[in-house]
Image (cartoon, rainbow, N blue to C red; front, side):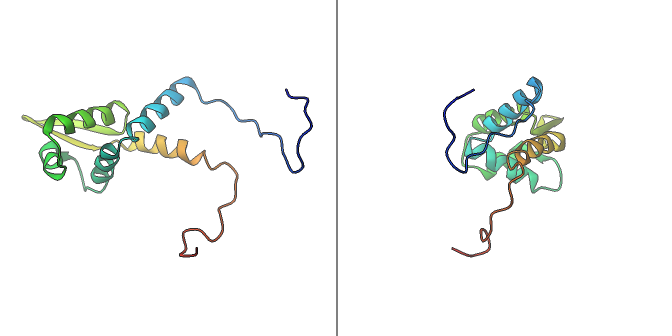
Length: 125
């Protein structure tokens, strides 16, 4: 602990409990997966669908080769953000509700106890 004098208005940190290692690793995987713009858009697109979506429709939507889309889907699946099923030779993907909810809980913890900023997001400059 520092013995230096604290500047005026400086407050000590509020302690928080460390994330369990498993939850921390899952959060890191999910955030890393979403750090790629294509994967973020794939997740957003799948989240807007009424149900599982065929990989063929995803390939048609993006201007990327099928192996590239499959690679992105694999990363999202391994991060726990997508579920996968097979119908014959076709793969179908859907948002994994539990994975997205866990990511949401983790992200909501980043706000802490701070009040919402005033005047933001309401058209004010």
